[in-house]
Image (cartoon, rainbow, N blue to C red; front, side, top):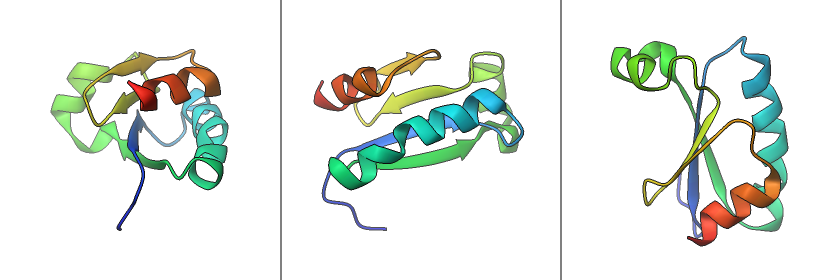
Length: 82
């Protein structure tokens, strides 16, 4: 996938209702702001489970800055601009 804007990574797992809420919250970014949001299932990686286990959903920028839930769309926009 080729993107021309910033990329955010959303760490979560299927069946997590907060992760679903966070993904829906971030949906407007891809259209209006050309921000790519990549969703990563932490259950597929033991290191990610150890790091984020009970913290999900976690939003991470390409620079390594992170937001832990709860976060807003405005928080995500600020993360992209860092």
